Image (cartoon, rainbow, N blue to C red; front, side, top):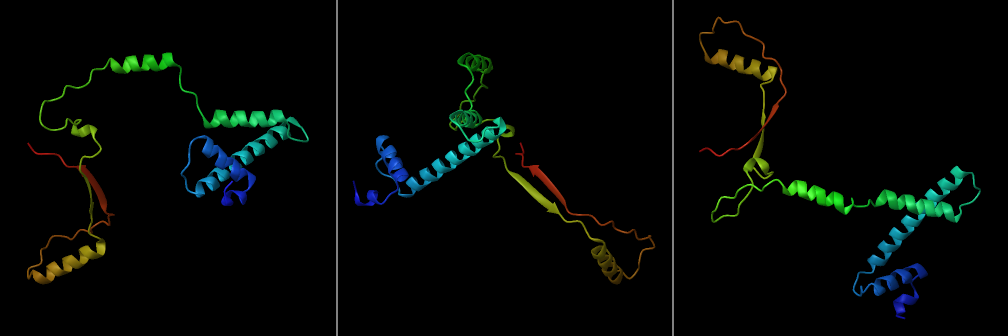
Length: 173
């Protein structure tokens, strides 16, 4: 054994031998610590679930059946089985009945219609509305610039929040 391997704990040596048995020879030393962290977290989760099952059954200690049930529930919760082959074949048949759209011959790469892509240009503009204070200042400026003030009654400008407008750019024909 190598010098560095003698200092490793037993679990780290197991991870190292597991990696070696799978043909992994070159890896960073952090990989062993990551595997150990994952391993310890998984075991702690399973044992915590087994303890809950044991307490629910009214047992004083965890037994093998509680651990089996905890592992089985974790596998069922974490991994889902693919649908049966017959179901996948039926879905594929139904999907393949729909013909593909006709392509136009040309030198460029055929792309889907622009409305079906997510890469079309899109711009958002913020249109500021005049605030009540700003509107009054502008009216005062207009009155001082205009020697004949109009006789029209002045209407109060309602206070609005900025509007956000979004629109896609379209090509003009």
